[in-house]
Image 1 (spheres, rainbow, N blue to C red):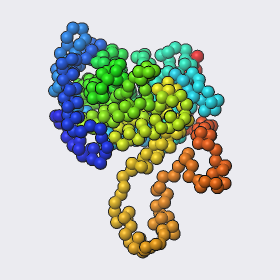
Image 2 (image 1 turned 90 degrees about the horizontal axis):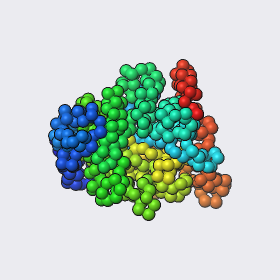
Image 3 (image 1 turned 180 degrees about the vertical axis):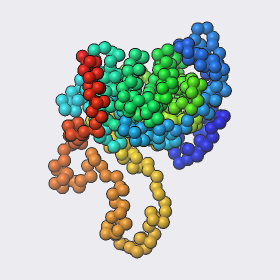
Image 4 (image 1 turned 90 degrees about the vertical axis):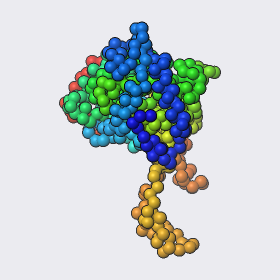
Length: 482
């Protein structure tokens, strides 16, 4: 591979799925696929950009991309991308093995922790999810999908949800919506929040997420939104969602390869338009459950392939968009906890960077603030379990052990006083002694989770927007709400 080396250094000490030889073969197969089979590019401007990179067009929209165009784009792309809060503080430095976890604001359905019922999702529900995410220390960003049902027109959904999010959290916002029409409106709102286009470009607190259509079709809608993102200087994720046996071959290596190919097409366009454009590689590779025909969000094969695609991102030295903290369960139960914990663990250990869909139930149909709170505890535990261990004279403590000697204890030592707070202590987990009063008065884990979620919703106050900005957002909100 031209240009990028050092993948062994990046992967040192990390569990990986693919060997160097396997990654090389997948990369070579990806290049062959893009050159021999080609892709459908259903936007004339995007075709022109690819032709400028050396691609050939056959018929109306079949484009074959030469290997050198892909290699050139990989070399041009930044290895890390910084994303900020709406108040201008650095929130995420995407790259290497640094992992950040993000929730999802709106889905077709919402599991209400107060009424304990599943309802049609609205923009107000998105605001609740944003407020909970703003409070949780291990949730780093939130994504809007534009699926709220309480709007006059479908194209009003993304900006309406965006207003709820930006009013209820300072954390970065991922913008993802199906239609083209809301793009300019959401961008106008984002510029308003930070004071203008220059400020948004310098410290973007939003990033965009757009999808090609597997297999090998890049719609005009997706391509135009990709190109607008590059034009506007907004970090962009361009990544497919694949289902083994449905939209791609039913073999893991092929799915990883096709996932890489789809994402790299977006990379070539972005880097040809603007060398160094902030681009995030990735994919959502999973399976169709042939018994139910669902696109599974709790399949172990999904975790396996996300790790493999993460390996490919590290091979290219590109920031990686991953998936975790989600489940096929319909409520926050044991199944949800198992699937969320294992997916978060595999993602953080493989070194994915921008890890989305925390808190989703029912294969991404239901958003649940309780699930977010549960995942926050899981991620906190994982971050404690995967932290680097400092080895120094101070941390080895030979002099201290010599002082205490065989058979002694360390409870009264100054060293213990200085360090015991560095240990992770649970918020939700029960560490009380069996049979004690503390253990007897504790509610079940489910009740504790519900109580904590409701407390966050009822008491947390996010940092407010400037008054004039909030008033303008509220004026628009009224006009768009059904």
